Length: 574
Image (cartoon, rainbow, N blue to C red; front, top):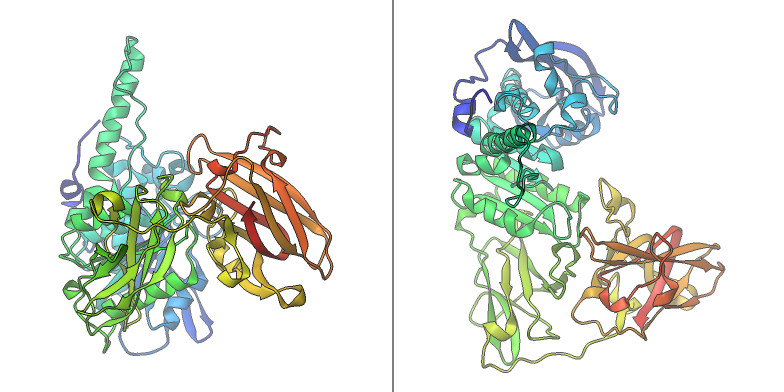
């Protein structure tokens, strides 16, 4: 190991404006009135060699100054359409290529010199948590360096409003955005969508390991040092306390790769004094829904553009608490300020205590006597932990989440009588709209545009009966504390399909764990203008090895999957 770095020492000697850009325009097109150009500029310079960074730029052909938005997506080539989308909203939009040489990703690329070849995706893809000698010899250092040079490149445009530069990433660009925000005061605001603010290195050394072989011991020691170096100088959490700009993040409540609790805690580590905001996306996994993209756009417009809707977010306190009221539990927020438009509580009865399987229930918050907002919860067991948060929408169109509230009703309101409701065997009826279902598959697929491409709806089937319409639909409600299921239960539902096809029904046990098991039954649908009633016992489901063993009561996910749209109704357990 050559040298150990901290975030401060790693970037202390780097000046993003000291080296000439030597930028060159490769080509320029006009797309729907938007200028789209591709350039190269000088990135890192080492041993008389330099990186030629490929950049895409899009903006309206106007003389007025426009704010800059830098889009970070390190594992894909430059997305022209995304640049045009932001340009149409009045931004000078910039994105650079990080991948360099990559067999998986054809297209024009950034060219790294031989001495920096480790930054090419083909070399970096399997070594994202490795440190080659020191932290400066990592793809992340080079990718962030090129991003900071992109800020310098943005300032070279006459129509760029250099006082209003924003940056954001989707998923894997989280490290780059947090490093850039922490080290570059030229950036005014930043966001991370569906990415972690905290990442750990997988430890291969266990405390109880006894190693006697010298070569193995040296290898393990090197690995430990590598991990320490990466965590100290590269990991996103190491940069949180240096971030002073307004920051926004959005994660799915059921994402297998992000953590709601840790995300909220990370915001408190920042130095932006209450300007770190989070939006928890209910029932979402890793698919960036269009509604949350629009929320990001509104947040940036408040930060970077002149607006009559500007207000100091630090003055907003939407903290929620739990209160007792006539045998019921209420979630209360004291906020009811002039900027408020609407608010919803999302809560789950965390029976299984698996974050990815929480069944989030929406309840609108209403104004209450004496001020503030409140919503009542439905309880089925006093001992089941409750987790809740509030999503509040302001008049400027921005939606943000409150704190995460956790409590056990019986302990929270000790010696007070609590009203519990009778459990149900009904998962869904047509009166529920789309109910507790969400677009998803049994393996958790909900990436990219999956949700927008598989939207669910309440639709009419034969005889005008309304049900849930879609092709890929799942629910976590089967694991909810409200469900009444036993080992002798049958799963029953009605289904309508215009054409004959196969409907695959899945139950999942231990979702998100190494012990996760998927059970499947294929239903043959007749097609035609009639409802078909399906009745299934748990022994009719088999796992991938062909074995039985499903217990409905242990399941946490139920999915219906088919090729063409169906309408399902009256989903219940007998």
